[in-house]
Image (cartoon, rainbow over all chains, first blue to last red; front, side, top):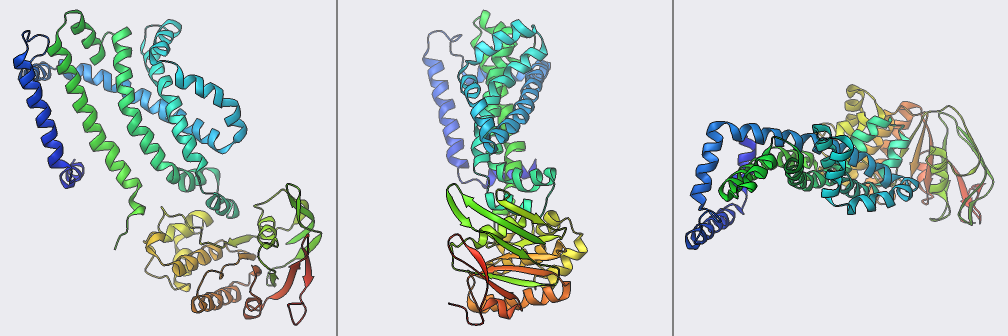
Length: 260
Length: 202
């Protein structure tokens, strides 16, 4: 925690960033006061009070927890499969030739179609939900990792072969460190895409989670509720980015910096 | 180590012709020739990095390569750059780092070291593999004269101590003598090996 905080406080963009958020809040507050119907655009403090009561009742933690669980499960699956496929396609031209058409098709299938088909074919359950989200993300990870695998240094490959390094050792010490920037990029882009798809999945076929709550609030046109859930979960995702993804990225890039 | 090469070609260009190269532990051979003649290709075949040739590579000797560039893992510290590729233990790695004059730099990343230091690290790594025959591809080419001289002396000392053989590929006719290596010349189109005459340049 302290490490992540130091990271934030040191950033030169901190002040402009804070002011920019403040300006958005002011704009929102002014707009909410000008509108005739406060239920269409509730004031920031109304939404804040709603978040507070959701947090106090414990409802927020349960549903956000369920959503987070789905996000993490599909994220792990999508990253693992995407890295493996990307590495394979980047290193072997034959695999690339055979799999590329499927990849292009997969990239262009709308998320909604995957979700609906997964629910129909697998059933209205957790497996279908997580599979649908992972399937949406796998092609994107694959494309990014394929780029990374094509850029692997041949001289280090030669070195590893010349010293007869084992397959796992090679992956761990030669290949993955070179792919780290691509993996980090795919992870950062992936987690934000995934949580948006998870909400749709929950909206369409789950009975808990942030997306399910938004579904209920949508039927009663409760804008304050929708905003409260959305903003609360945005905060959770930002926290994950700051506390897990960024520190990991910094650690993976340690060797690039000059030390004494 | 024995290579019976029939021929080696890239697409339709024949690079290397029929040649035989046999080197044993303790023997030192330098393959001389102008750049582009196929010296590096020959070394890659011997090292097992290029298997698309017609001919036969035989022998059970342990080989280790010193590449033209240091070819270190930038994301691993100096000591790990020896232990990870070769699988040798930390004690041997530390001892070798001392022998090449890098004691105290075990925890540094390659980019924190000078090019000369990186090359010495690559040399230490090659010896950590306990090779019977050391393969070197123009290892002194891009160094200034003084650094190159120190590297050559260091290589000779390590070869003496370990008893390893050497196949050195170079375009500098001065290097073989300073390493006590028997010079052979690679020339012609496609290139073949010729025992070098006392006065090379013919």
